[in-house]
Length: 567
Image (cartoon, rainbow, N blue to C red; front, side, top):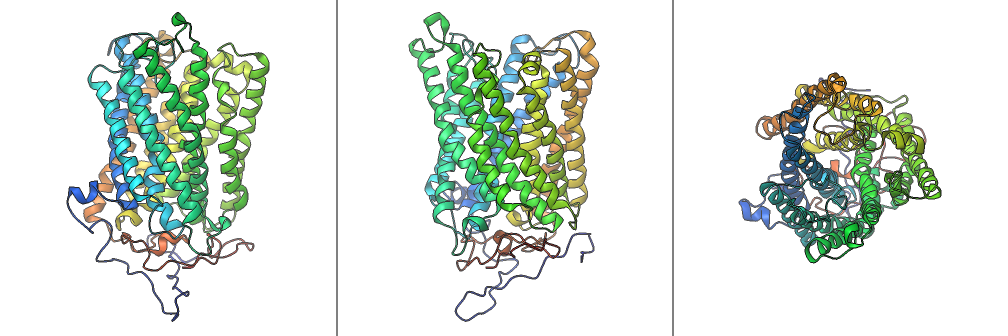
């Protein structure tokens, strides 16, 4: 097919608006004089904004800061693990490092990242809306997120937490010097931000779709966020109630989880994982939605099995609520319960496999290009498959008993969360950055960064599978000397990974001033969001678009493709 001098496929010609009364061509101007970034200056105009795009940028800045803080703690952990003896920090400080690394990265970065940044920015234009259903609630959700984040960081300043990010009782229930209460309150408040965001997305997708935008004309990115929002709204209150009971136990002395007061610590694990395993899909489902968009755009094909990919998102959200007790195989649950949860844990892999197989079929005979977003999509597929297959291993009772609480579990978790969720996030950020800012970044350095992230990640976490299988427990700051070589490899990989994560900060900021103007549709994509100018105007669309066709069509699309979106 035709390509640009840089090897990028030429975008199709802008699609004119044919639904106006006079049939005039109403293409968006490529560089609007007034857009969401310059429509109102000053800090107050941003802090009081109700525009979903500006709120997405506020979230982008916020979670980037939290990611940096969590990354610094991870660096401290890997420095400690270079040598067998605990000679960098004490055992107590090490406990606080890995606890707060987990808390910050899970609750303040991984859970919100794609929904609050890319979802906030893109869902309204993808469905032809001018904003989310509840703009004020959208702004409130950011303020709640920031309050929760500051309370969590406050706990770091006054000494940190040493219970592990899961807050397992009786560690967290018993009176100690650890600052469990402010951290729990911070997560509790941030949880309401997640609920409000999910509610806003659900109502927006139900009620604000453009004329002609039926459910089966929705982009798969929107389907993924719809399923994610269901999990947010149904699952997050369980975590909130659990943390509220933990607060009552610590402050008022109730005997709920602490066995010394007549409580049941396993009850806490049931309640915590009833939310936290579905929360894994809050992190990974939006990334899957991103990958669907990238696969279609950079292979120039309709997503194979569109309806199967869409319904697989709902299936993952459903099965996600049925697998929580596979975290409790060694906690004393009955053999019959363990068998059932093992079965459901195998079952949840099926809709995930449907996505991977359909993405692979989408690539078949496609006109594939290797732009930076596509490199992240390939990285996602490879790392997510390793994480998924090792998840099936952990769902097997015999294997789980052997590797439970070892570095095998750490590696599996990071292959899903870092290798999956963060690869999807970075892929989406690189894909939609030209739309968000109107500027292109350095293709050379972005490819270097993507390769460093992939290589550094595997060098960091693959050795941990071997360490775990050999019996090295997690959360220990000292270990036998025979494990040192693999730990040194893991620590070296972590610093390569850190460089890969730092590079986008440099070239994204560089692009804001010196980047080449992107134009409305630099990738030649077909979604409604690419029909707007870059950066988008405040109201997204001058006229409400009318959708008549399927969301994906490219010049080499499969014969059964229904066509492209027109506005």
